[in-house]
Image (cartoon, rainbow, N blue to C red; front, top):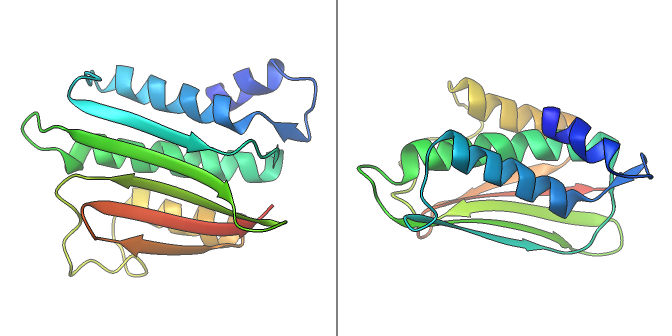
Length: 152
């Protein structure tokens, strides 16, 4: 939330924020907080320049925060190496896709994202489906990828 407020104070448009700058700030903060070396885990950010409404930026920022945290904690055990990737792109005039993925060990097949006991993953579902009124999907091919599509 502090990063969202900081981003808002640096803009003149409170209806739309520079989401790419916001995402970079979240990711860099988390990498520093977890003491992760960029030589071990790379961060790749592919962001289209899409003005994002504030009421969508907040849940997207919280989702990204939670998913990067999960990747840093669980995807690369024992000083593993790999990549975390964030993609933010327009699907059409109003639809946006947010993907947070890693090429780590992946989530076990038996986990159903609709029936999760993890507080963090429950929060991601609630934010994606209720706040963004979007759809969320989990891809386990070559790591873990959460895909969220919503209308801006």
